[in-house]
Length: 109
Image (cartoon, rainbow, N blue to C red; front, side, top):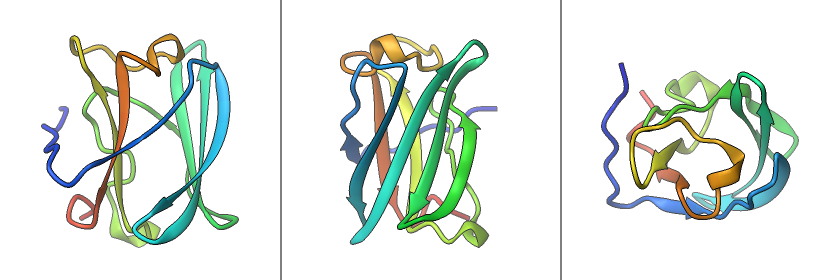
């Protein structure tokens, strides 16, 4: 079951319409690396704090939190939002249809 997403306090992470990409962002004051890769089975995301992996190759779904657990030592959580429907993200829509959102703290259980 997919969780509803609260937009308040969220930060959009800018992505390009590329099938594979890596970018560095500051999230909650920590330097993070976000890797996104399109595969036949869907869009996958890996997240690193410095060089330490937080999550690796997590399948991305619309409005579904990617990290979810505090033992992973993430300062918050990430989710994709489909702006025109409820489809799972695809790299072709990463600049205009699917938004990657980071929300600090309270979404991680």
